[in-house]
Image (cartoon, rainbow, N blue to C red; front, side, top):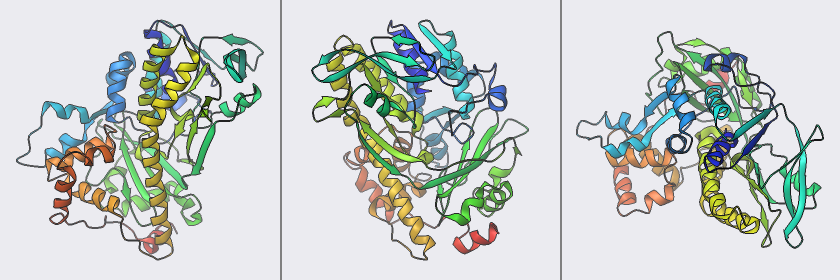
Length: 459
């Protein structure tokens, strides 16, 4: 999706863009057939939960309005988390600025359908499906000793040249190997298995509605988490995730087990009140990975930029993936506008903005993953880890957001990827306000099964 977004943004800047897509099937005619008939073998998470957060949606609306309109006009689900919480507060006022917390989302298949349909219609974009890439081609270097990527070599033997190759090949990006093939220095790759396994399915109502939120959207229990997400056209997903090496909980892949576990969570059981419309989908081996393509002061190669998950990817449970990818694509568009005629300057400038703007999001998400794994392992062992300061603040925000407008907007900014938590709490008075709520906001454990009860539920 981020590759298609990049293609349409760059075409709008006057470039001729060719998109190479490995999967052969074209976009189906509508979201319904995209969900049931579109074969996307290269996307492991195609049948799992997906979410487009507020900042990602605003980028799409501004930079790729045709795709945003297709999503909006074909059943995309609109929701404003902060307005929802402010409506619970008798004295709270909703302001025009609260529009920034709104999001428009849908199933992964629907989001892909909107992007692919828009790209097929977009002037300056040519989408070639069923094309496997074999590697990079190289041309004359612009920096001594640094290869310059001049295009791509396809599995068919055809070569395609261009002023720039944009690598949007996702979590499983083969770019490091392609760079090695042309004699490039290996990028600096930091990889860490997030340690989670995901199991979920989709449901649909008979009246076009979706369940209401009575509890948190991401609900952490002792040794598992529950993630219900509304989607387009009266559909929604329900996902359980656990530690990947927690063998007992692999039975989450059984739909009867999922139903029993969710029914045991009183604030979330109503998310089962619909018709199941998919088989159980699962995904394991999800890594947090960040790649840096400037090493020892020199780019690995010029003429190529890696964007979104091909550059940096994290655990998907916080729903940030496509939003962070679109932020990165928007930054890439601006960098290309300034430096396309100077491949060396382009490589350095994009590395600088990636490290400055995107790296903090990656590191923050990875730190949260590590802590959640640590807590879940302790709970499995029958130990209890006291919450760290960040967790305490998050717990207070989660409870106080339905009764305090400042807490609601702080939570909304962080959840919608409008600002990092550190940025929000650095503002005058914000941290003091939230800490002041801690003494008046009782934080109770979420009602749901403990470890012993969970193991009984799964049999």
